[in-house]
Image 1 (cartoon, rainbow, N blue to C red):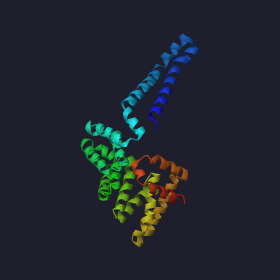
Image 2: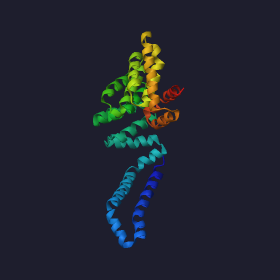
Image 3: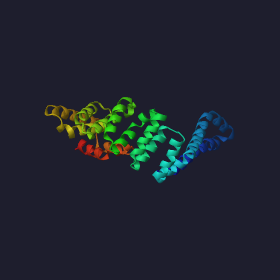
Image 4: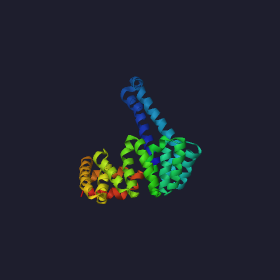
Length: 272
């Protein structure tokens, strides 16, 4: 992403609008009436001036970070973020999340878990806020038992916006840990009750793929739940184009990138 270009365009747009507030009234109304116009619209002018100043201060304060992101220089970005977060103790959600994601880009799951431990000591709420990143690191690092334990705890503490995804990852971790029956039950709950169309579809798909591992008397029950979940997902995401849009939106998230092939398979199944 060209941060400098976005910054320049935003600056130009703000300056053009500010200039129009001064020049247009002057040439249309004349010098005497334009002064009254400016006085009447002083609050609006001040708001735009403040926006201009905030944009420039924010960009200049984060210029090095934007430059490293633009270059995708992950080792240098990690060094910069470690200095900001760990050395300077700036444990805020944006920097912690960015540092964890940068570690995962380089497949360094151990560093993510080390960061999680430091974050839990300095600002525990950020562990819950970034539960999907920290939990996914355990799966990518092949610590499946650790992932089961982590997601089981975060099911109760995760923010409402993350709850369904945390529950799905709990079921996925159970499945990877060969705990088939509790995994299926977790997927069944999400297939029948999740308000997230992607989570509903994924849960229904995984349910269908794994019900043969259940005792015969339960297979039809879970097949029915899978069918119900599929219909619920199709109500929320009725067309393949809409599904691809949802997946594209999620593609920047590490937890979604880690299961991209399952998202693709689910889409094929959902619209077949």
